[in-house]
Image (cartoon, rainbow, N blue to C red; front, top):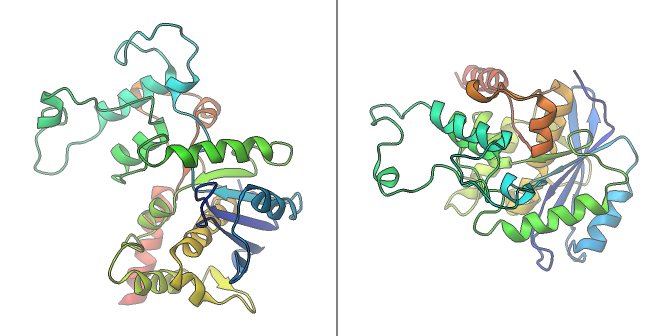
Length: 295
């Protein structure tokens, strides 16, 4: 089902006291979108909380907000059971689904079955429900994308800031209605554009190539220089966050099937938190179209 919005905001969220937060604004033009703003502009103040909230609130009700940070907590941190029975005995539906996702994941080609490697023999847990959510386990074990963890190393401050922003905007934005969690790395990987685009020797060339590859669907408006996104990985990620939300709304993405041993209602899975990525069919179509164009 297509979702209708006038603007899509993409936020590459940085630490609350840092200067790295970036915001991109897309205007929806039917089947395509136009970048009409990328901020902060040169010389502008950084997006600390007050400035970021004020900027987001300037947009009308028909606005979709897309943030690349965890918007919900892992199941262990939501749990109200006074004494933990242990991961294997846990009956929380999210944890049950996480165990099923790991158990049903195919072994890599030519590798031994999962669970027989050195880490498993040494007792390394396959999941940690106090740092992970089902969506991250789905990304890694179903799609082969190494996902950041909801409260993993280095993610905690971002998750805390994201939680604050969700509460501060709760009168305007509702999770999975006009507020979604995205992950630019996963979006690009599933669109067949998964080359490293930051902290890499040719990162700028890669960002330019990616923007050119999606130029049929994503344009830059007058006065908005694509070169700024090529130069800045934060602005680039903000644009990809917004582009993800545009595709989510335009193409009516739905949740993929759950783990066979732990099917849950979509509402429950969404309430636990979900990182929205292109569906497999969209990824195959996009890859095929780009191969044809290159031929």
